[in-house]
Image (tube, rainbow, N blue to C red; front, side, top):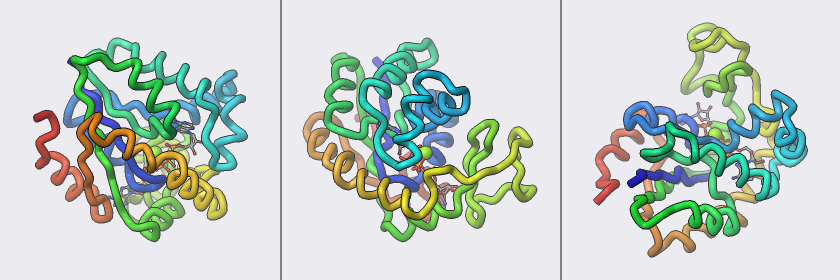
Length: 215
Ligand code: AP5
Ligand code: MG
């Protein structure tokens, strides 16, 4: 049986941040499609070249590109007991395709993170990521020890290209129109747990740990 957690929520809600903590606590890999794509863009791979324009505009990358990358990643050994999914699925086609990779022994939980838009916009505009290892910071809430430098690897901190105001609005729009309706698809199919994610990381983790995820 694999334990599969779908971290479900809008841009900036903290899927990457919460996902990293849960992954360490639960010993399951965090699979972030956004990180995977950004890595491909950085390395100029064929996936990266196909994805880059869409990502810059805040649009979804075509399903075939994303699905190939996902199927390859979840078939790796470290994902055999389960995994946390960050940023997947994002539309009905992806959800239906993903369902075909699950068998009846797998246990799937959708962790639905919610917060008001002004919180998301503030988090996205103040976010910085490490250019080398992808670690996530926030200029006010989770600043690095040394300004502009990653605590973990010493890399340079940069703003994500899609964290500019006009791209942020486009991403939020796409979340509402294409991704959020998936909650209806999952209703009755898998357990959905809704968690308020507007306060600090420690409180959110505590709330998630207090939930009966697998019963
Ligand atoms: P992706 O990288 O997944 O972006 P996203 O979904 O827009 O989500 P973000 O990474 O922006 O936010 P997050 O929820 O991870 O928040 P974070 O933890 O960083 O996707 C990027 C692009 O790739 C897409 O637009 C698309 O083009 C493509 N793509 C990806 N998946 C795809 C798919 N399946 N299909 C097609 N295309 C796909 O936190 C945000 C900030 O807030 C940080 O600064 C953090 O430090 C801070 N923060 C987090 N939690 C808290 C807290 N509790 N309190 C205070 N601050 C906090
Ligand atoms: Mg993320």
